[in-house]
Length: 111
Length: 191
Image 1 (cartoon, chains in turn yellow, red):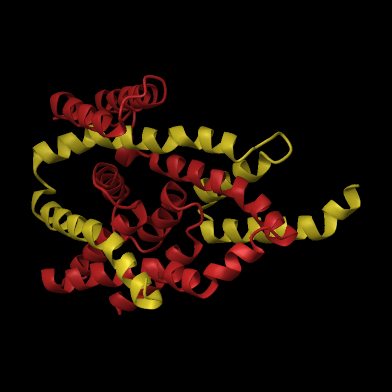
Image 2 (image 1 turned 45 degrees about the vertical axis):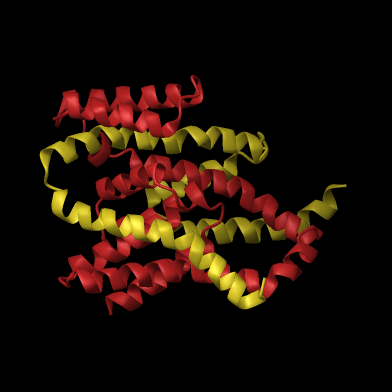
């Protein structure tokens, strides 16, 4: 690998195929969005997609070792984003800073 | 100006896209649907569906699509819209590209320090919340309709939701096949 050029080319190579596919689909949608057949197919697909996103939440919770002690973090984060439209960036920053402060201030006093 | 807004928005998404993939969905959705209004929630869900069926990460796919739509909605032609796609996609990958070049080595050296571990102890559970938020944000009337507006559409949607959950989680059916089934059901029942 030639360092920077290598990194650049591999990044481009990964992004380019999906870029072209989505570009074609975006153009396709511009023409077919009001087509009743396409719209009916997507009316069926959309709830299925939501299930595909909802289902892994619980397996991710298991692999992230969510316990009774810290389950308030994902719950509070999700509710803040969902109901209060809090920007997820704020949740990420708060979680990172919170974790840092916890490790710095609280954890040493726990022993 | 639309190009600058696109760049800043997707740079921000690329920078804070912790958890990658689905973890980014609530961030992308908050920005492009609720903040900038570049697409409707239904369009966003369509793009997630398309991303499921095509290779490539959801972040890049939505950046490409949003770039195109945003410029098109601003009343410009296809060529400018493609340029919008390129701008958004580049902005999305730029932060991780820069970050990995600058700190590829430092990253692995400092990864195991207690400070990094306590930061990640806070981030890991938060990413679970981000994923839950993405799903909750998508459970809206644009994707499911409502029992009052159109009960038939609503209950078919709920049935397809449960069927996909059980199909992929319990029966281990390939998600793409499951989406094709759902599309076929939509064509038969919701036409």
